Length: 148
Image (cartoon, rainbow, N blue to C red):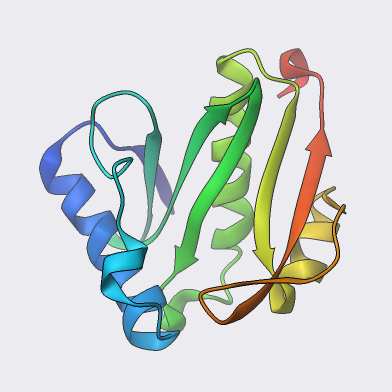
C-alpha cells in the first residue's frame, strides 16, 4: 500500500475516475454535483491517491476552511474496502492538515460510515442531514498539529 500526494494532472484524473465510479455510478450522485472548482492542482485543495498492489484504488482531499481542515470526497473502490485503506486516507489527510497548521478537522460523513470515523477519533456534532439524497452527519476531530 502506498499513499501519494497528487501533484500531476494524470494522477488527478485517476482520483476523479475513482470518485466517478464510487459516488456517481455506485451511489447515484449526479455527475454535475460531484466535481467542483476544487478539482484542480491550483493549491486551494490537496488531493491524495492510495494504491493497493500498485493500482490506484482510493482518494480524498483536504481544504482549509476558516482555519479548519475539511476532509472531502473520501472514497475507495468497492473491491478494496476491507484492507484498511480508509484509515490510511484519513491519516494522510490529517497529516496534510496538520502541516498547514490546523488543529481541528471536520468532515461530512455518510451515516453508514459514522462508526468507522468514531473509531478514528471523530465525534458526531450534528443531527443527520441529507446531501445528494444520502444521510450524513458532521464529524469533528481536534488534535495537536505537532503530534501527527
